[in-house]
Length: 351
Image 1 (cartoon, rainbow, N blue to C red):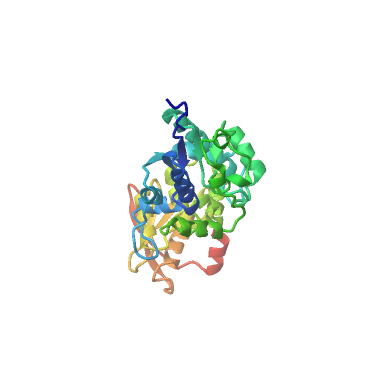
Image 2: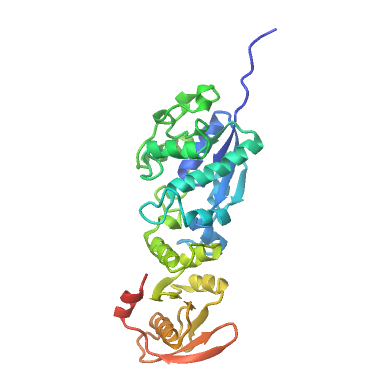
């Protein structure tokens, strides 16, 4: 009778965004025989998922797709979709480790997600967590020291496997325990995506979003300006899922300490704003095609006239001397005749 022990099949929780890096990491784990429980976290700030949820279409006129579902199907695993947006909103307004170049709290974001992943790992009795991170790829969260800080803060020291870059990092517990073959893991470093694209070709992975594409509104410079402006004019810093969507939609103008105007840029944005109207005043041109405009905050006559002039400026009547603008609230409606505002006013108010 043989005394040789059968090597048990390891189990992992894999963070799957649907981007190239996380897809490759997932595939590398499956190729090593790992039983993978893939997880996709929805934060409320994912560009593609937000647009998909709004029913918007991409530059090809096609509906946006859930990239995590697509990637999981391509690799042949199931993926659990987890909405963490409510708790995430609380974290994002006051991150312990601060923001990156824009409004991206990358270190706090990783800690937050990994803590959630650790809960799932314990629940499904997995051995480790898998991410698509690459050493040196992101300046704030994927340098060696921040990665170590993130592991400690999330309570996952030794429990995170980064298949693409593993041989450039200290061995994880899974590698030390021979649950994984370290020699079959990658040693990619740096910001170039060429090594990942080459690996994708070798593995036969062809369908994936642009590796350099932005996936988070918080990393966008324009969004960050609106994000900070919004929080700076609140008595208490807080954010809701509705706030996150509205901040990503339209042109924003600060016309007073408590007052802001939002102007839709196209029919899709008009529809999104229409769907998310709260207590705002709704403005629109009566005689011309034009944007839906929302006035947030104080609705005195001066503010209403400024908002109306912005609505006139961005409609087909922008070259007219006067434009009739409809103003609607929950309990009233009126028409204001106004001249489109001047370009210098746009520069003064634009966020």
